[in-house]
Length: 353
Ligand SMILES: Nc1ncnc2c1ncn2[C@@H]1O[C@H](COP(=O)(O)OP(=O)(O)OP(=O)(O)O)[C@@H](O)[C@H]1O
Ligand SMILES: [Mg+2]
Image 1 (cartoon, protein in one colour):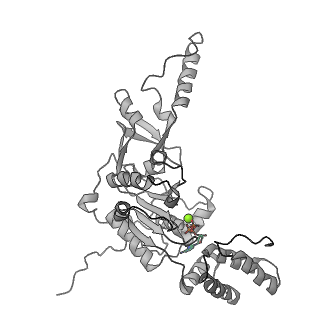
Image 2 (image 1 turned 90 degrees about the vertical axis):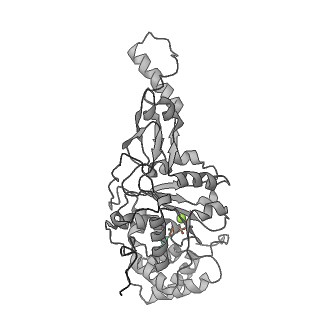
């Protein structure tokens, strides 16, 4: 008897860079990762228009060369509804991956949260500015009755709270969208020690509460709140947000940081390495066209130097770009290439340039 393919739709993400609607064919989640938030929201429109997003991000998404292993683990994260933790040396394409997947699977604009040592879970979920709300309430009272006392009581619980509350990238990604949003939590290794564990809980539950809206729910059961990155507003009922399609979450780390086992267990982990010569040639082709003999020699030089210290792929791309565009003699080009590909761990040379 012919063996039946258990997953005829695998893979949803192909790495071919051709946008498609395969995400609609994703099998149902495992029972322990099923979410039922609602009412369902439509995914914001995708755009390839570089003026609407950043040209850098649009370019990265359209040129990303995924390895088979990357394709496999992106699909594992999508099927399992788990975050993808991407580790690896600088410039190996950790951040770009989120843009590439979002573009191919038409997941809409990527929600990006850049982590610093001061980032807290609260920043990622929402920002609320009670002072601006108080100020607006005073202004309104003064306009209505110029003779009213200058300092009225605090605004009524329901008055205009949603005008001063904006969901952050994580808070927006967990809205009940019908297809997963792409969320890039960039450089999680820079966070303080508590953030990975705090994040873990929210990503495990796929939901969170906004206490300010829960308190105001008696007066305003449905608040129209602002979301990350656009002027759109979405309804939040009784201050509770629960996802529907679990977002495609990419967490990046340069790999120097150890994460708690409880955190690692709940992520799919992809370790990126320095690309080999075939992969590098593919990356150069995607960004700058077919590598000529000189570009090929720079690739070889990059690979031999990469064995001795950290180099990033974009250093090679810069060197090849200059070799094609700058009108320089061969000798100074070689020198320039060396200077554009210094080891990343080294202090810059005082006489460089
Ligand atoms: N696989 C790839 N395919 C195409 N371009 C790539 C690939 N990997 C890296 N690049 C290019 O190299 C540059 C660096 O990529 P990116 O910023 O995603 O790396 P990173 O791993 O996030 O680096 P960092 O650790 O510094 O944040 C980008 O210009 C990107 O387009
Ligand atoms: Mg990065």
